[in-house]
Length: 139
Length: 139
Length: 139
Image (tube, rainbow over all chains, first blue to last red; front, side):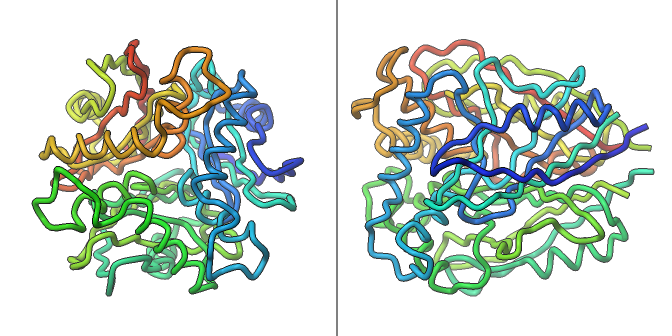
């Protein structure tokens, strides 16, 4: 019989950029007792987002952060800058990446590939705690 | 006992750009009678897409529209232009944003953050009605 | 009564770029016997991704491939290049597109629009087999 479980993770990234949360998410899956199903992560912000990326190479993370910093730069001429120069680029980088991810669960584990980690992509310079809603349906 | 509900929303954006549909989606969730679960939106087009963005600041929407208009411009040299200069940029902007979103439901409400709204991002200049398929599983 | 089904597709794209998998995915849905529900695809890699795009116009695919080749080019100065010049751009193009897609199912068919196809977007020059995890919940 299918059932569901949910929680809200509170995440504080230590700085702007990618912050891995794979182990926190795995812990939620383990404690749910659901061994087969579908896990969904939803980022409750428009200035932080979710990315599945390489979990082994710090250089790849730095390149990814540099790429988005250049693609949606802080110095551009934005109309919306109420909260400072990192405000609007944060919205743009969020729109370019993911607000939500769903990952199948099998044998009690997320079906991530060997090199995949789940990251919160913090786009603001000051880093308040971020909420990521988790939902799991399965059996 | 889990159950599911579905519908297809017909959305007509008044112009190119972001068009908020949060209230239409909320109405579907309310009428379903499902208070805890997972809602999925799927955009049935390759020249319009879905974005979760800031729902309070019109300037942020204008900046976001301007950013994508510059990133995938209408004036570029595309091979595919059967339907006019806004045809191929529409596909590119769709690929850069989201075709689908899933949002957990709790206490009969989507777990959106305080400033998050759900938008159809209309990339074409002429705006036919767009179909967004909704699916809800829960109890 | 809701139930679920899952599998892992092994996909070998013949070359870098978009490779349509709509029929393989449809076959899984058909064989599941589930006629109403939610299908999820999850790409188990950080150098290949998923895109829903125009399935009729090869020129649109070429334009899309050329756009991402220019946006995250192979010739740029990346710190992470262990596996060659197509390594880091592959991660960037994956982050810009989708790792996961969910599509509602009705009457035994995915609710894709008339012109939508599901594609694996292969970002590497050498193309090992790729794994796409499929999960279906419904009845």
